[in-house]
Length: 53
Image 1: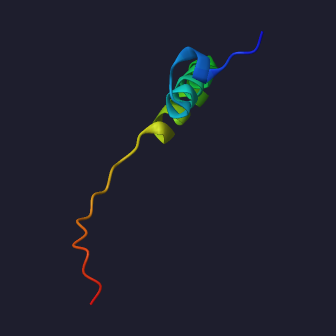
Image 2 (image 1 turned 90 degrees about the vertical axis):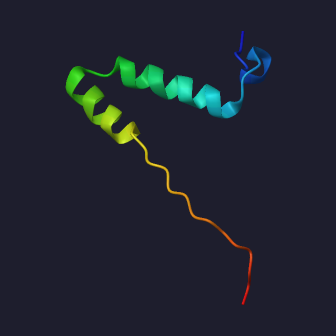
């Protein structure tokens, strides 16, 4: 039986996040810490005024 993220009622993005977390948790300690540090993300915001001058 194939699993479908659509059938589960979740978005593809949520499905990939769950898969990535499962893979990271399966790693050995040292590799897991490296992967978790890589997973940290920052968000940058920029205001766009819409003018094209």
